[in-house]
Length: 91
Length: 91
Length: 91
Length: 91
Image 1 (cartoon, rainbow over the protein chains, first blue to last red):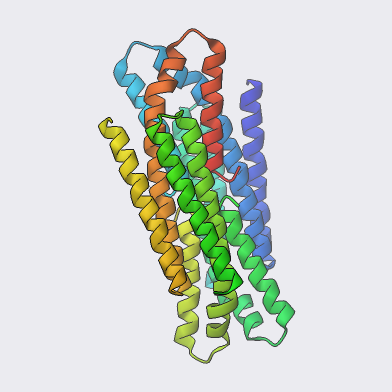
Image 2: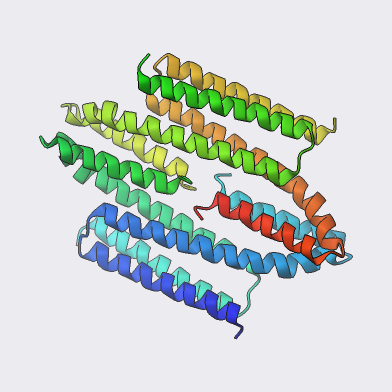
């Protein structure tokens, strides 16, 4: 397993533990706002994870496709990137 | 356990399972964009969870505080709501 | 005009000027990323404006409705707040 | 002026008019939530504008840089794309 992959896996395990922590908070009737702060922290951790995945994707698949000779493949990776961007906006 | 609490717990268990699913995707070197689509789906599931928590909070603690006689407590719940809102924007 | 209203108007005039600035950038074929940075700055300025409107709303209409005796009016303001919150998420 | 540029300019003029419309709403003391709905609509219009700018950027500058022979230039466009993505998340 590469270092990058290990880092991604560790981040997901941390996020999974964080989600279990929120389950305990709900069970223990913790104050709503304190629960919200934790779920918002999980969402930021997922944003960071997504950013790392996207970095690998841009340097890997996207670069290969755009340097390649298949115009349909180039168009495909660009369309996918726009969809990812739009999903992070409210579009 | 109330129905609302059970629903919140079920949502968190589903999210936890979803996070473990993404771990398997990373281990299996699934295509980056397919991983991103799953983590974005998890973020939307957390948005929905947050919305339910906030609904309970507005109908419970916030209503009690605002109908109460302590002006500092009223101010506190309003300040907290603004912080939650700002955390969902880019502020 | 109150100070709060004057502040809101000034923010909107600044945002309007900023949008006209982006029009000049597009006309002058400025580098795309520099344009994006400006439109994202406008969106953050709108987030800040929204936060001020929401603060006034919580301290004004929401407090009045929740302290009032009409349960339908109380429910209405809570439902509206949830819609505003959901529109800032991807819901 | 190309069709794409004309379309971008029209969108910005519409957004500018929309911002002026919100100024009139503030002046006329329109209900806060109705103001918020309009500013959120402006933010979605800016999201759509950003998406079009990004599409042009990916098909233009990014494709040229990645197909070019300068590794620093390739790295630069990838870094910029990640910054744009992170600015749309809460990162």
